[in-house]
Image (cartoon, rainbow, N blue to C red; front, side, top):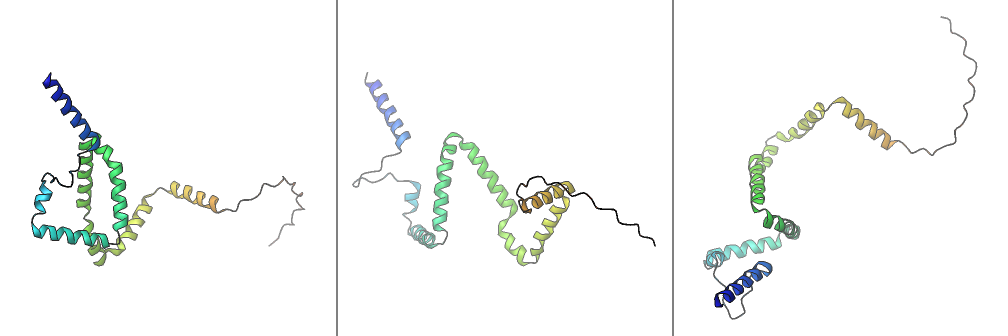
Amino acid sequence: MQGAILRLAASRTRLRLALCGPVAPAAGEAAAPTWWSGLLDVPAVRVLRDAVTNWWKQHPWHTAGSAAATAVGVALQPVARRHPWALVAAAALAGGLIATSRPWRWRTRLAAGEAGALPRLLNDVLATLPVASWLVMLAALAQAMAPAEPAAAPATEPAPGPAPPPVEP
């Protein structure tokens, strides 16, 4: 009987932790040491963390970054709970794409004279489009730019006048 009661109490504790998370320690109790708290015992790490935290609080993108982090966290937490490996695979794919594109070199390429690469690239893309797509796009633009004519009552056209005399050379 005692074993069943202990198992029931342990099950309830696991459920409570799964639903509500760990309970914060009271003011008099010390929190269980973690790797981060152990790392913060090193004074240089604590100074570095404080410097980075102060820099980020004064950064112009702090508000937007915090809002984006909150939105991404809210959106990705359910996915991470249901499909953690899919999220890891997506992160690895995104990291691979970033590493392959090397965005840290874009600025030096532009400064080195490849600034004309974007117009050339756009020209190449536009040149490969089929003519029919250009015609459809131009027709849509012309239709959008044409003034809307009010629906007029059908008018009878006047009878054509006499034909002009032929011109002799």
